[in-house]
Amino acid sequence: MPYPLRPSAHLRLPALACLLAAACTTSPGGSGGPGGPMDSVSPVDGAAVTDIRFPAHLEPPPRATEERILEAVAALWSQDLKTCTEAGRTLYEYGEVAVPYLGFFGPAQKELRPGRKYHPSALVLPRILKDLPDTSLAAAVRSRYPTVRVAAARVAGESRREALVPELIEGLDDSDQAVRRACAGALRRISLEFFGYRPLDPKAQRDQIVARWRAWAHGRATSPEDGQDG
Image (cartoon, rainbow, N blue to C red; front, side, top):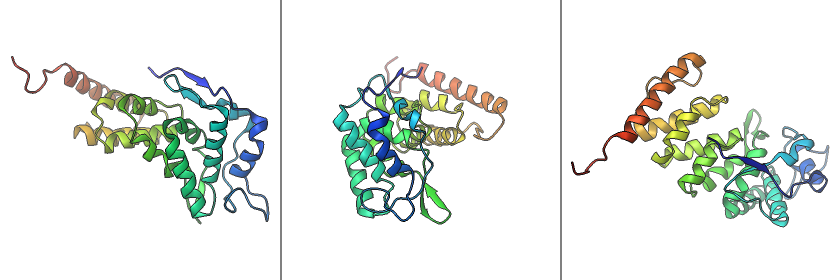
């Protein structure tokens, strides 16, 4: 079951109006934020800003910390490489508490060059997630934010986090196909199994394969440990 979520205790729309304008739009002929002009990205609905959520094990930061995190997230959209790098370093130093903010702004995209877009959060999310213990990474795999779920699943696979197999199997039934793909890839890395799962197959077909994954995980969990005396 996912961790219960609670809204940030400090986030308020009026205090963030200028930040969101800088992070999500570019004024004609003007600069978009610290460090130089920013790309136009998908606008964030101001009314939804108070909806940033935290897993139950993670306390929202004090307001001053929250504002610094948000400034760093906004700076990821800067065209200036030094500004982006410093923002990424700042967010990495804040660690897990920065993850919900990166997830919230994750759907907005930055244009690297014509026709090439990416999520600025991808610059720093994997670095933060790979340092988390299994329990925190498992919560990230269950995050309400698809960008976080994808990044967490990839980190789980790359670092062979066997403890996260149950969460990754549940992710095979995620509503977001990118999450399903990431979870499938992670499970294949960890288990060296495949079972024919394809994230774009019809749901009824995927459900059959997910059932095989669950049976495999159950058998693995109930089998005697290697080396245990009889």
